[in-house]
Image (cartoon, rainbow over the protein chains, first blue to last red):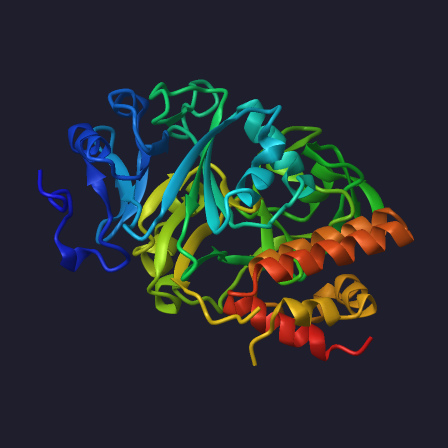
Length: 345
Length: 86
């Protein structure tokens, strides 16, 4: 097969020429010729792939121009890493060794890392809760995603991650690809967030937890469910923390009589506010033509206006939690690779 | 102006501590710095400004900046840090 046969009409791709939906047979051919691939699709498709330089995870949803919102159970979304990549190293993580991920990247030089973790796995819980405490946190760019399933079966059916080391999808392990760049290039992570902190009450919590009973509202302890009911909270809105200018969302995924469930933990001593839509956004692809990868949260995917207006050219899998150094929600994470500026020392 | 590892070493720790503890007063460009500043601010808060925690935070932030010298957004943030007079 020609090296570029899998490509679709270039007129339809203005992010990178190396992303598309392909069949498992096409993906297998690319793997066997030595391409370095990041893959997303149904577990039955990932299970057909040979060993090689790839990692992948399950999702049936993708953003691919010009359709914007694509669902596929018979094709895999592939990102073929560019030829300037010097080396890729695949590592397997579980809840006991995920704390080493930044250290592992640190040992490898000029790398960025892509991590895929199954939804509901212990390793994803450990990462969500403690990534910011890992040694060498944020020392190297770390992006990635939580794999999943259609929303109606996400809680009842398993989600998978896989790698080309043994080519067997699993539910309890995460896989990372540490991707080494030449010294002439650098990778940088970015977050596209349609939300920002609203102008309402300051919300804090007295522990790191994804299941909240009580919260401090402007310093006063309240039953959080009661507070949300009183204020007419819309559960589609995340709560948002301001990390020195980076808006970090925490997604609400359920409210019972007594508890509020979030998709990732809220943190003690961090101030949150209920989100409002940020009307001063720019389409990421207008800011950079060097986007290599992107991962869009399912929470954005189910909002057609957002996809059409801002994300239609952000090719990539739709995910159940996206990673930019730490786990995020309801954002799009993307990574750019550019030429370095000269630094003498 | 392109800032180097020497530049980072010469930034007084007092400036670094000020940047961490007043991180939301500035507009930062580099995502890793934004997230790290908040993390370090929390560390200082939770350790009640202990001397050892302050020193660790300075070392960590300078380390991050040193590793990020090739990133233009980091260079822009280094410029801002250098100009801060606590």
